[in-house]
Amino acid sequence: MIRFEHVSKRYPDGTTAVDDLSFEVKEGELVTLVGPSGCGKTTTMKMVNRLIEPTSGRILLNDEDIAGIDPVRLRRRIGYVIQQVGLFPHKTVLDNTATVPALLGWKRARARERAAELLDLVGLDPSTFGSRYPDQLSGGQRQRVGVARALAADPPVLLMDEPFGAVDPVVREHLQTEFLRLQDAVRKTVLFVTHDIEEAVRLGDRIAVYGAGRIEQYDSPALVLGAPATPYVADFVGADRGLKRLSVTQIETGDLEQPPVVHLNDPVAKAITRMGADGARWAVVLDDDGSLHGWVSAETMSPERPGTVREHARRMEAWVPVGADLKQAFSVMLQHDAGWIAVLDDNRFLGVLTPSSLHEALRRSIDADSEGVPRAEVVFDSIATV
Ligand SMILES: Nc1ncnc2c1ncn2[C@@H]1O[C@H](COP(=O)(O)OP(=O)(O)OP(=O)(O)O)[C@@H](O)[C@H]1O
View 1 (cartoon, rainbow, N blue to C red):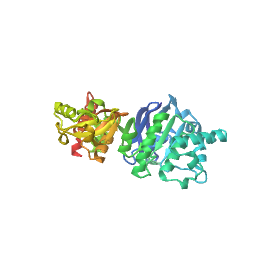
View 2 (view 1 turned 120 degrees about the horizontal axis):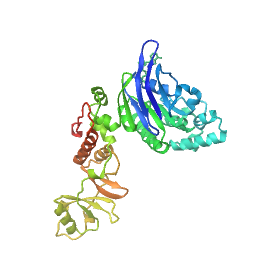
View 3 (view 1 turned 120 degrees about the vertical axis):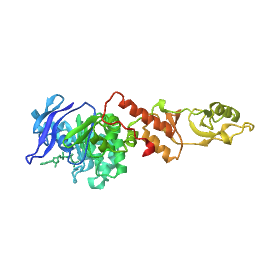
View 4 (view 1 turned 30 degrees about the horizontal axis):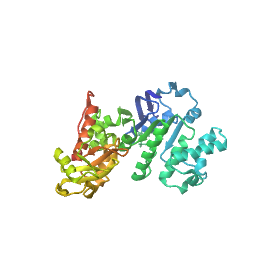
């Protein structure tokens, strides 16, 4: 979709901003460009919409050399979101969002209808926010309008230059989650510049890690974290990459432990036998319909006493859906101060994660990536050391 072929950019003062860059972004792929300040990320991005012209090499968009495309026409095919959103202060949110369709000559009603759809898509109710002016929005809301505006004419390509850089970390995480959901729905080809490795890992299908003017590694987030290609990348992603990796490793059913399971209406004696068979001191308790109720401890029940598990069971609400990432699991575990959490598929109980199975899952993920991939340095950072 976007291909860089030996692209370099040298400024007249002798600065080489980008040096012999070759890489490809596939259709529907979200690639994050990450690296320290001044390493050439923005230059790379601005060459795609011809705000900056390369000194040598070429950039192809769908196999067409962009040097031959009129810049104005080119930019209509490319949405652009920047940190200082650049909304027009005197225009309403709806009209701001409709800017590009209006420029493209859409009828006003159609442009506004499209703008309302887009606002909805980025989580801003058009009937509440459409008539506001930019200074009546929070920073996070302004960024959402920026994204809606960039998507309004449905461009196949989106360039995003630190779009969430100016908001606080909580809002930023929110915007990232929303953006991922949006990207799932619209599947644009996205180049996303950030200097934040966490953001790059969270959003990118692939990450280009920049050193000075060059890409040091171009890989999946899991590989960048698990098998840094060079000591520079290892240093850049940081010593806590095991922890970062939690957010790119999904829980799989094979990671789960299977403690004994009893039901609320089971007689106490049956529950004790069940636990005894596994040598377990506790069991997961499910409702009659099979959904998670909580847990019960062997200590609180005596085989001589009549009754059912219901009288002894304790509620437990620490759970995550299967497919969640290990970071979510870890955070739920900490939030509930729990030694285990349940993993559910819809309402169905699948098993539990404990700190040690979480650790194993992390190891599984790193082993899978490093198999057969000769990398400079494959180090496992135990979560226990973080
Ligand atoms: N017009 C210019 N003339 C000379 N040098 C320039 C010019 N524009 C950018 N540079 C230099 O090119 C290099 C790359 O800049 P670029 O803006 O691409 O970096 P970046 O990785 O996006 O940085 P940041 O994260 O700080 O935005 C820097 O050393 C910068 O000083």
